[in-house]
Length: 393
Ligand SMILES: [Zn+2]
Figure 1 (cartoon, rainbow, N blue to C red):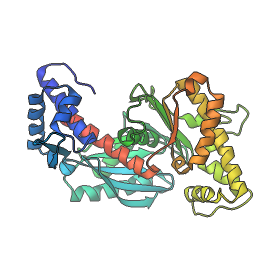
Figure 2: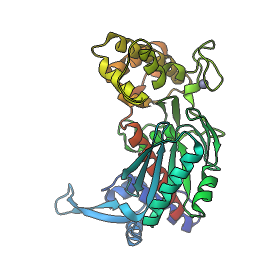
Figure 3: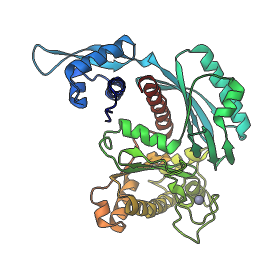
């Protein structure tokens, strides 16, 4: 945690932010835990906690007996309704709308099929945002998860390959539809949001600072955790690992290159491979992929297709591991559905092929949340982190 040392006023404010962040991350934490974790002196922590309670960001959540006899500890909780955010998880097929809260709870409230034109999509979300804003004064941010490349500076979607959209100025368009709303709009790629959510809640990787998140969906995206920060790159495209070529003479990708990784391991590719000989059940690629996994125990061809997917997954992971030497590689998006017996094939192949010292302490695992949960969670974190910073920095 960062405790800045500037003038005393800004120091006080950043200490407040640090303490609110800890109460959000560890709901039920006590003042004594806060003293231990921040290294601040107990009276400073007490003052800050009372101040946060007075301004309704934090509340007491019942009393627990502590280890020491005769002493009781007070659990501190973030006040759920101190701030809310509108969450929009855009998918190529469907878009979910949710509400996120300061205590990191979120709920999905609505879903619609994503229109094929960007114009129709913007009008649709504009209409839904307006309706929510009319009924709630607590909305402090709007968070959008995007299946493509974004520009966080001018709040636009640069490229959405599977919808064929380019340069959609979300903020400008929302202002045209909604007028000046004075509520910030945040935008981020879905893989980066999913990694944010896992870093926050998944005990298996919580203490790790270097890792790669592979987001398998209709294409393949990714996010890089480097020295504890999600690496964005010069123009926010870092982590587009689906476009790492694994065969210079391989099939043409929509990005213009040949043999991109996603041409071998995306859900579309894998499902199409099976459907070229037999037929999977389900109305979309996601449900068909689930059917493929369900079939794999008794259908030899389904098992073969998945084995081939695991082979190509390993080929790419070997490259990534040799370049980045991460502590973990997390397979997420629809990859979360892959059973451990297949992930074990990946572990074995990566261990065999990658540099020995790069795999010594490597953890390869699937994500703990499904693709909708993790994007909505990431959207909640993004809006609430920015809201807290806005109040205290
Ligand atoms: Zn490509």
